[in-house]
Image 1 (spheres, one colour):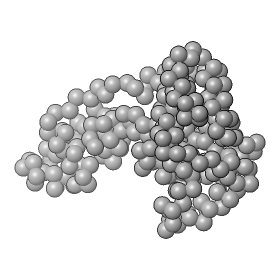
Image 2 (tube, rainbow, N blue to C red):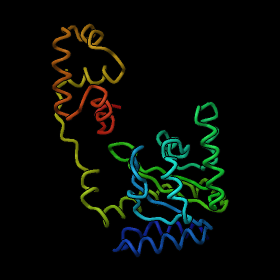
Image 3 (cartoon, rainbow, N blue to C red):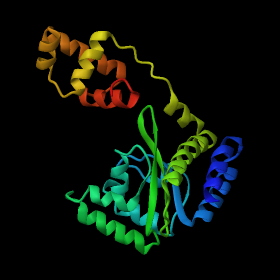
Length: 246
């Protein structure tokens, strides 16, 4: 019965014409599943307030303020795990991945504090685009067990509802996220860029390409200028986000 509800909602999202209609119907689905809280949010940087990037959501009173005040976004195991995830996962699974992390104790304290606000368990579903991880859908509150089929359907819903809400609430940001990659690289620049992404130095790249260090630096300067990168590390990061290298 609930699976049918997910399939129907997934099929109808594009037919809904307002943010309020989408949010209302989505919350009806979540209520049927027993999820008390949720958030559909653009991916924050460590120094950004996640609440300022919220497309829709409801959280326990006081928890967003605690989360921001204590800068939990920096050590939140669900957010850190999200950076490597290709599909949705359960909150409780993330601590296992960070059992040797120096921030493990603080992560555990965050989880305990979250339970005090009614966030006993939950799930998070990533939303990816050409520039990498762009946002996520988080569901939480009471303990709810989702089947593999339901996890897959919520993965689809996360992507569909994220882009639809962004289209309706902030089309300028949407246009920036889906803009085409307009960077024209020469063959030599692409070769140098790929070797740079492998961690090679100018000396190593010059030997492989059989060119001088000066020529390698010339290519690198051209790459940085085309990508508007601040330095070589920034150029590599931008190249991954834009799908120029993988």
